[in-house]
Image 1 (cartoon, rainbow, N blue to C red):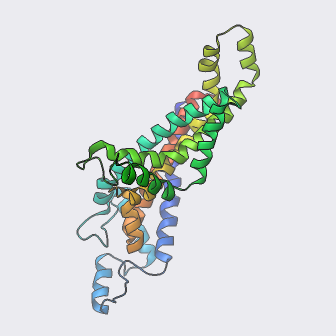
Image 2 (cartoon, rainbow, N blue to C red):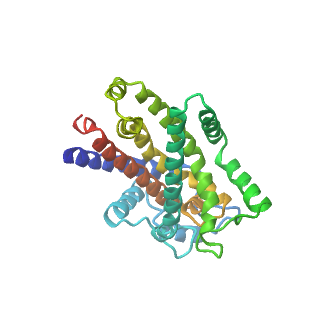
Length: 310
């Protein structure tokens, strides 16, 4: 098992290298730049700025310099638009909020989606099944930028139960987390509900489940000990991409609910063409994605030891 973990961990290195390389050249090849705008700078001023940030060097030299700073010093560079602030500082100040929001949303989606899927499978073609899958279809069909404002309209502006925007460090406190977490969790709740329902139904039809029932085991033992362990494997496989998707999906939710997370500065950096901040956000999001997939692979290896020996 340890060899499997080390092999998967080492595979992250070329993945991150490819992501950094492709992102760097694609961003720099795109037209425009961080210092181009409606009002053009005098040539000598622009030349001094480019020299300060080493942007007057050939693109290959800039790439090697950036790679050296990132790999050897974990330095993502200065922000071109946020004066006297580093990319490391901006991301470290905002990323914990996005990760916390994503973690809470993932817990909600797994708990509620898994429960809804299991109930739907055990009550197939009953009203519980139809209700759960109808809600799941809505979650899959309706985008986040529609769900968020609708929830705000109902629970904040009409019922006045929750604040419209804000974060947990504001006067409203922890209740500000409810609407963005529910909004962000809704589509993943839907996918997990449908995935777990189909998986449970497939396992229920397996031969070893019929054998367990034929032995006279209680239905609760059959479901809890035999069905769920096998049925949850596809859900576990989905958790890595789901967590990464929740983190990246928080860009929309953070904008709608005015949450000071990394998603907002990512949007702003794209609008400002802030190369280093865009690269920092891409590297951070990519690191979260590949590490989440690594954890899922390890957990999957423990649940199904055959994976570790392939």
